[in-house]
Amino acid sequence: MKARKGSVLVGILWCLALLSVVVVGVLHSARLDLMVVKNHGDQIQAHYLAVAGVEKAKALLYRDLKERQRSAKDHNGGMDNLPAEFKDVPLGRGQFSVIHQGRRDEAGGGGIMYGVTDEESRLNVNRATAEELRRIQDMPPEAVAGIIDWRDPDNQVTPGGAEAEFYASQASPRLPRNGPFQTVRELLMVNGVSRELFMGEDSNQNGLLDPEEDDGMDSNPPDNRDGILDAGLSGMFTVDSSVRNQTAAGQERINVQSADEKQLSSVPGLSAEIAKAIIAYRGQNQFENLMDLLEVTAGPPQGQATPSPRSQQTQPAAQPSNRGGSPASRGRATPANAPGAVRTEGSGGGPKVISDDLLMEIADDLTVSTEDQQPGAVNINTASVDVLMCLPGISRELAQAIVAYRKSAGFFPNVAWLLKVDGMNRTILKQVFPKVCARSETFRVLSEGRVSSSGARKRIQVIVRVSANSIDTLSYREDL
Image (tube, rainbow, N blue to C red; front, side, top):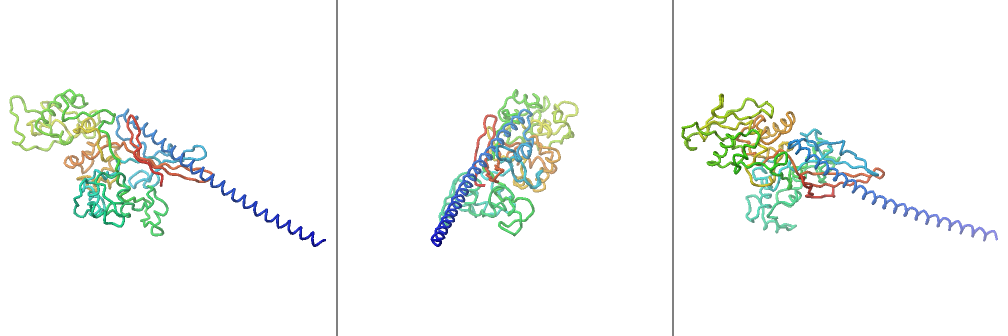
């Protein structure tokens, strides 16, 4: 009887043990399910926190545009680094940050900055000439030829390049686009552009310097361990840069090719006499860009015949002596017959009527183009040394001088102010003028959302173009 009772007790204990195992298993599975659900929910929350960062950046970009237009400033640097607006902004159960990796020549010295970057600080791969591409440091000739062949509309092979026949014979067959690049990452399909050349140290293409990208040879990718992100061509190129052909105040520019005397003389600094001289000059000469305004001369004195443009040599214009004066007084032209007028003879027989300083005063109000947009323009207020030195005539030393000037003297009010930079001259600026601008309208926003309790994180990158009437999203990425 006792043995039977003991067997029953053992059976009950075994049942309890099995039941305990089942209960523990069920609880463990339920806990895992709850954790999966919670983590999924946190990922969704992190996503929308990142979206909140993007939307806030859009709102502040629009506000910044309106403020710049009201003050008639092309650039103020206000969106580059704003920790108060973009660093660890609390929202609900988490927070968001809008971040980007600083460059060596920026205030952050290569560290994390809280703000947005502009596409006009980069070289537009669809607009850059072969010569400009060759000026990129360590750029292989076959990569230059490959880029040109990929985007040109024909199937004629550039020396060193590749067209449809080559790409079709590869292990992963493809065809060149024979049109503009749609994204920068499309460069990875181009013959001559290696992953190392394109990505540099930024192996995950998130635009940030991660620990494994700053540890030397300890892990992939190989890097120089200098605390600065080398993003290769991906950090230097864009396909989206473009600015409107408008003044800093958002008004339509006056075209010196077609404007009448009244329109020209409405520009502050341009007198009726100068307007007449511009109209007379364009009757015999085509304005290639605004630098040609420096060649406009006053008419000859009364009773003196106007010499033929081919019959005399054009003398260089006298340099103004008041370059440090205030914008309000700088560059006011002196009438040709006034005492003390500079008698620099030009093709019209009279003195030059527009000085360097006057050009700096009026350049933002004038244009020679009938186009509404200036695609591919490089912003002289934000471009790096490496991008600036791709432009025609600009050496590394001159590019460094441009960056040094805007750091010490402030941002350039317009392109003509490049004449103030040591080493810049009229010849170089005439080459550069059509390729540069002094403001940006296309911006890259990298937003990171984080849920505090679990550490769930999500990053979103968008490229937007801001105008007085809208903010348009040009691209969107979540795989960062």
